[in-house]
Amino acid sequence: MRRILSLLRRRVVIVAVKAGVACALAFYLGSLLPAPVDEYKYYAALGAFTVVGLVVVDSFKESLRVFAAVVIGVGVALVVQSISWTNFLTVGVAVLVCSLLMALPVLGDQRTWAPLAALFVLAAGGPDPEPMVLGYLLQLPLGAVVGVVVNLLLLPPLGSTELHAATMRVHRLMVDQMRSYADLLDRVDGPEPPGPDEREDLVRTNEEQLEAARTSLRQAIERASRALRANPRARSRGESERDALDRAQATERCAAALLAVGVVIAQSVPGSGEAQRRMRRSAVEVLRQAADIFEDPGHLRSDPELIDRARQAVDHTLRQARSPEASEDPDGLLFGALALTVRDSLEVFTSQVAVLD
Image 1 (cartoon, rainbow, N blue to C red):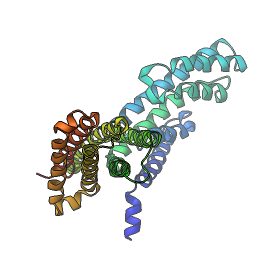
Image 2: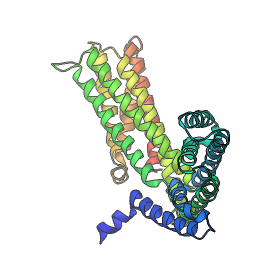
Image 3: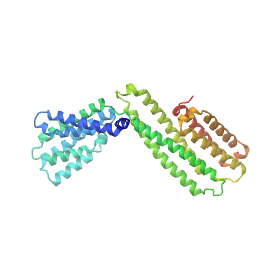
Image 4: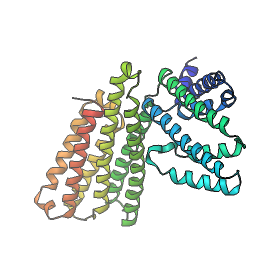
């Protein structure tokens, strides 16, 4: 039973149920319209399917865009048919004109409806396209309205599932990458130190992965923000959803800081002196302590000493970076910047992600 309930909470199942309900209801309502419009009731189901599953604000907006694109396509088809019969030339001209009109910003993601509507009219309208045009113009918006209503009343999406998944992906990447940077610095003084190419390859791979994850997270944040607008579910879950948004935004800022850490690692030039070795060991400790904190906010609450140890490691690195020996070494400045960046990330993470005082 628990498995079934978990399955029913999944977005794909919810959207499928809503799509089925919306399309069935739109088809039924479309069949109640007077003849000959009722013969085109499948267009009502198509209109409902187009907007169901979107966030509430977007479903309103997209339904209007569908109608605008359809009007353009139907209008072009009617003009073309009034000039000549349907043939290869009129089809080409209609698609050409609609494709140009697709560039109108107002149509947004629904722009492809314009040439599709024109082709439907030219292909199925016959010598007397008026009944089909009327059915198209009435049934499709009817279905879109039904889709909007179903979307509004039947579990309107909040975007929290995608937001949580995107946030967790960035979390995992940050932990893995901080440890990979720590291991890389640790190997510098080992029997097989990494070469410049290996260091650059690691940094480049990490940056590409983290930037892709940040992009997905920013998109999830934007969708979740839109999902709260005009959403009746936001009244009961709005506070928790906004908390999740705040944590996601803080996580995104921490990821941006980690990209700066990668720049420091890429630009550092391993020195062989004792001061440089101490600086690297200190930076390794900072990265590993930070990775432990980022890995599990729950563990952080049960062991607050993790924060103290990380702060001590950061302070130790900063003291070394300000020492007379390090001031003449470019890596001293770089690792000092690394410590400051990690310290800022820790402050953001502990206060806004783990929500600790």
